[in-house]
Amino acid sequence: YAKHGALVDAETPATKLGAWDRKETVAMLEDALYAAKLTSYAQGFELLRLQDEEQTKTAKANGGGGVWDLDFAKIAAIWRGGCIIRSQFLTRLSDAFKANPKIPNALLLPDLIPIMVKASQPWRNIVSRAVLAGLAVPALSSSLAYFDAFRSGKSSANLIQAQRDYFGAHTYRLLSDPEGEPQHYNWTGIGGTTFSTTYSA
Image (cartoon, rainbow, N blue to C red; front, side, top):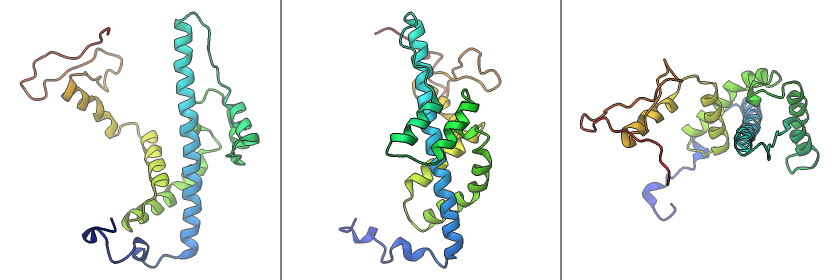
């Protein structure tokens, strides 16, 4: 971008921050970093859980061998003891998983809920200030987006099925009947009633 003067502002993004109270900003940043870190842990453990469930389904379909049956409490303890992470919070996370081994997402652990509630607004303040100042904070902003998507019963992600149905006739399911028959809508008026189905290649 340095070669394209029209795209480079004379001021650096940091000079646009304005008069922030240093003490208040540091406190908000601590909350934001902590919340983002916990969310990244939760997302990581969710990926492990989903893969564990998929592996279990595959194993059962193939005769029962190869089930992972991951112990998340033990995984957190192992990471605490010998991984590059070694975060002290992993000890609390390990204890929490021992008490709630089947919880679907670590953000639902009783120990985490009050922490996330407290940190939520400072986290948003830091991300919004950074965006307005033109500062890239990808870890903080992407983890906040994951957190908001996770806590939202309905979001823009619900439109993905409709978009897939529009361009590829992949069908969608109704919120009023999530287990019912897949639906297809003729979005353009010229697409007819043909829709995508499974096939063997």
